[in-house]
Structure formats: C-alpha cells, structure tokens
Length: 320
Ligand SMILES: [Zn+2]
Image 1 (cartoon, rainbow, N blue to C red):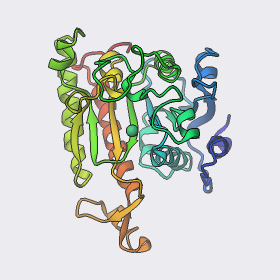
Image 2: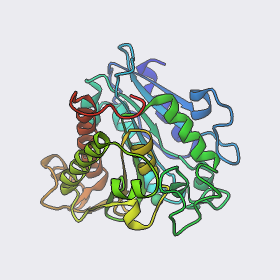
Image 3: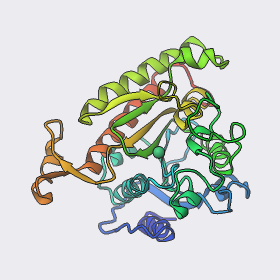
Image 4: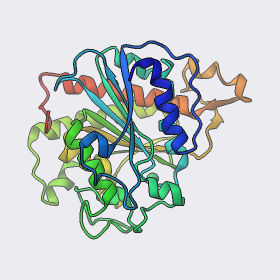
C-alpha cells in the first residue's frame, strides 16, 4: 500500500472499531503503510481472539529495504478491554504518525518500522470488560513471573488465544522496543528486578542485567516529564505474568507499560509541560492535552531504546 493510502489504512481500522481518526494533511513520508491482522501477518490462522476476532496491526515500514537490524517498535493498547482511552491513544498516535505530525516521525528518519496494535483484547473491548471472554486478565497471562497475581492469570502461562497471538507476533517481528498502554493511574511500569526474575527460575546473564539497569534509568529519567508519575514494576505490585516482563526478560525487547493517568484527555498544565504543549493550553480552556504529554514520553523513551539497541557495547538481546 502506498503512503497516499496511509490515512485510509488508519481510517479502515478505526472504522472497524468505530473510533474516528481524521486523516487530513497526509504527508509523503519515506514509509509504506498497511493494516493486517496478526493472523495474516504471521500466517497463523489461529492467531485471533478467543471468539475469533482479528487483532489488527497498523504497520509503517521504511521504503528502504528492511533487514534484521531495522529497529521495529510496537505500541499496543487495550489489553484490558475496558480501558478505552488507551486504545484511543494508540489510534491517535498512529493517525498523527500517518500525517507526519508526531515526534515519532523523527524516528522514521532512522529507518524504523512501527506497528500499532490498538485493540489487543478485541473481545474485552466489544464487551467492555477488563478480562478476556474467559475471565482471564491477559496482562497476567504472559510467561515471566506467571501465577503471581491478584487476578485470574489463566490456567497456565499463555493459556489464552490473545496472548498466544501476541507471542506469535513477537516471533515474527523481533521488536526492539514495545509499549503496552493502560489506564488509569500515574505510573510507568518497567520490567521487574533481575533478582526477582532469577529467584523465580529464569536464568539471566550479567549483560542483560546491565541492559535492565540502563533501561530503568531511561524510564526513571524520562518519567520526570510526566508530572506526578512514579516508576513501578509488576513484581512489586504483585502482578506477575505482565506483558513488559515477558517482552523484556524473555524476548529481549525494551518494554514498559504506560498507564494513562486519567480517562480524561485534558488536565491543567504543569511547569514540566513543553512550550509546544503550553501553546495549546489557551485553546483548551487552560488545560493541556495529556495525549501530547504521553506522546513526548513515548518518543523520548523509544529514541533511547533504539540508541541502547545500537550501542555496540550493549549485549545483543535475545533474537536480535
Ligand atoms: Zn490495564
């Protein structure tokens, strides 16, 4: 699909889920766009939700030939089906990227491929439920620290169709970095500490521990731009089987969970907000668009993740 059709790719997925994305000002980037289900992308017809719904991925790839060193980034939302603002944010980001309006477009100059998965739990989205249709909290069903959970983590790790589909997607794409968007509390949730991972039987070498330290430093430093936010991790919260723990410790992907602080999109501005954001305040009754704040955090952390992955002194993480 040509970039001219980029906006229609975003529109088509939005139409599927009745979430409007406007697509004016399409710009001609050095990028091609497509919308495919994980089943299509992986060639695995079973890579669908429990009830058979597709998990749609909006992809943007550089026109230059992709190779194994091309950083590939995933931004996912809606793993909890009742956190609609998270899905809206992911769709909004994809639309901004499609129109060349996002800081993320600066990353595409470095030959970066993007995948946006706005509805990771389409049955839950359709039913308005946090869990999937079998009552399982999908963000407790991944394969690291599985079973430590205050909510139903499923019968075993990856017992659910949706987490299996995401695992297939990772096997195909080998993501450099991945963000799982949730709501609503002012937290960034990074990977759990290596001591905890080791204590639960997963072997980790020192290079990976080094990568962990550097990544947590990135998250802690950049979270300063999100007023009131704290950096947490799944183990400390009592939430094993989380996406970001599996993505980082098992897949070698620089990963975190971004919690949107509120189901409301606008809030009163803070001193940490950038001039670009501040400029929009007057238009919004003295309030700032939180999506712009989150977007800046997403951009900065992904840029750092690409740097970490390229650094020759860093370990090659699994699968890279
Ligand atoms: Zn959530």
